[in-house]
Length: 159
Image (cartoon, rainbow, N blue to C red; front, side):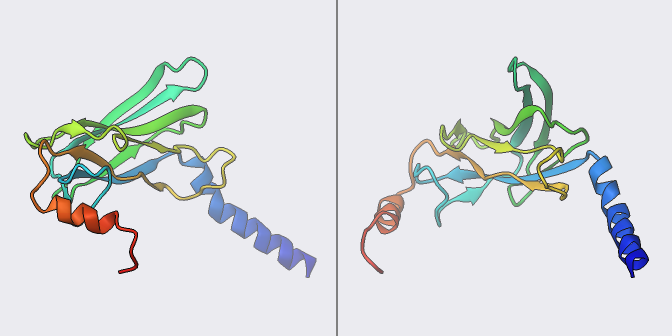
């Protein structure tokens, strides 16, 4: 019985080992246009195709940039960026780089970056797919329907 338990434990460790030794990460997130300048996604929000997004990692002690790469959003406003190295002692963030939309190219100060963990080192994360929070640009002028929409979102009533 002990041999069977030991064999099962060995097999489970062997199946997890490749995940621990492979330091590739797939970072996924969205970029949107805040058409109401609300600071969050609403029903009037649309997702931006062709927006450039960067991943920046800094050394925790010196705050010097040690890694940077970019990606572009697809037709759904989603970016998929592959990072091939482990950054266990670095502070990593996704950041907005550029919007292709002339009237919606001011980064929202509260939603212009998102922290991400790009390490398997002592954190228990075995998945290579890492989701970043959505990031957004502010439209130059809010849409006419936004006043009514924001009133709905910010009301205290139980609708």
